[in-house]
Image 1 (cartoon, rainbow, N blue to C red):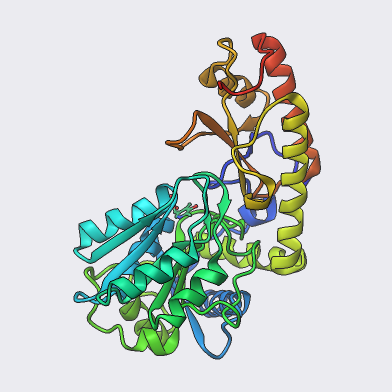
Image 2: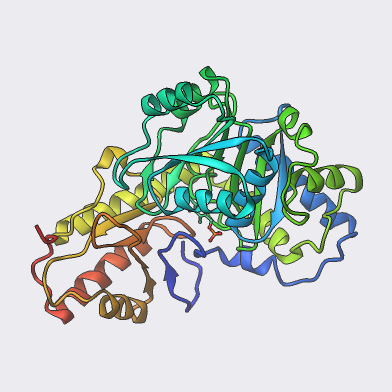
Length: 375
Ligand SMILES: *Cc1c(COP(=O)(O)O)cnc(C)c1O
């Protein structure tokens, strides 16, 4: 990961560090009708379906905007106006889906566990039995709030057994943690260009079961976020309905090629697992404590407890690390005082070890000694 850049390394879950070649792919303008540009779109859509194991059953529909635009498009398009969505919540992104339902007028219920507890498939099964109005279930694969991995396979099984349909927010996992449509039954899965696929931000996409999407005409609450309309138009004209994010797509095309060259989901996941191991081992050696036990930790982003030492001030810590070339992330938890460090993006062992060295140096400068969290 030795792209010679002066910019800081982003140890954050998006925007994140991209390769120089991915950035360079943006150094030209494309007309939306250019055949090479059209081929790039088709290639990306096909590759995304492949990565989800959905070839022959699923289609990929891209959506302009950040990841949340894709999630909102997924919910608005797939959950009909008379439907009801049961959302499994153990962090901010599950809560955001509930907020989306409120704003766009879809009825919903939530099944909430604390941020350090995975969603429970058994509780889900009971909830589905108890409420016949629920038509769809929504789950977050890796809840980026804490970094916890939710049991999507078992959630999919409980949903399918109850005859309901599953929507997955796989934003921070897709491309690094397998979610294969042959093993995990879903109607739609949303992710974006700028997380584990290491493209530039600005575009999301939803992998849709085609037979389910076909029935979604007229469901959407919004013109711009209508995935069915976007899909029908794209199939018919090979073009986006509205101005496509051409530079982002060109970068994404390049990023997907680099993802394939690294060994696809398996290879990308392996690098992130190594990054995560180096980070967790190094932080524990310094005395920090992770929020999650290793078996619940996804190799995407790690939450650390804030040390009890009164000399530890996150704002000072953050700024010092930023000056040393490493950007980390504040915590977003309600259960504990914390901060987060990401393992994703164009980062390898050297950058993770560099970050650890900068952290050790900064603690020394701040005079922080007691790294254990407050009791
Ligand atoms: C990043 C992320 C999103 C989307 O966030 P945006 O800021 O809109 O890109 C949604 N869900 C999860 C789990 C995420 O990690």
